[in-house]
Image (tube, rainbow, N blue to C red; front, side, top):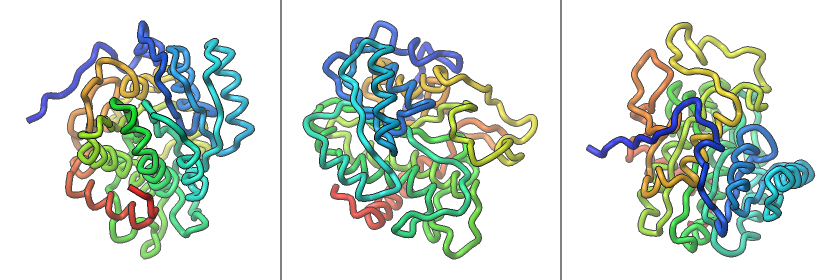
Length: 313
């Protein structure tokens, strides 16, 4: 049995705490959804440690503003903006095609949650398309840039919400059964973890580490804009085990996996509160569900995702 990874950090640690004393000069990073919330704080923390950071956002004007603000706050002028709409396959392909040189850090941070029933121009359910398929295609298309780095790290943001449901391999787009926003969200977050499991297996020889994480419950990021209050299924009374965090605390696990020596050589794992998560125990909203780290599910999802995205790798 593989030994669980532990670190000196915890639920109250901030992104700045995790990167204290770490010099990322010369390392190039891309953070998706970096115009606000966790993504912006992740990009800021990486830039503050010297990394060259690309702020990727759906609206270029907003991304440009965020990149300029981060450059001013950190004094790091190697901060740039790029347009990236994860729900648009052409936008994803254009971003990857426009990347030149090695890529050391890719943080797949962008996400949506509990949206009304919406579909992309290609007919995909929007949460699955944005949270998983867009990031899958982006990462696969950037494989060669990641491999060129020699020691690249990919971080995939999932959620404790993954415990509410597995990937619906026979109906991922909810075309056979009525749409449920929370089951769709759970599916996309389970897919995030399964992607990390399979990418880690496939790409270990390329020096690419791929891990997933649950940032915790952070209100005020914009992720919950489609809901007024969390439903009972999201936080059953008395069973949470999850404390609320502010944005710097929420970004800590992401930057731990992206840049900390404490995660050197770690790949194919799922973290929460800056520690590797234990198996999920029914009734407690923590840990990782067995179906989300099942290698057969991971391979099955990879094959499905290749068919749905026509990504190159």
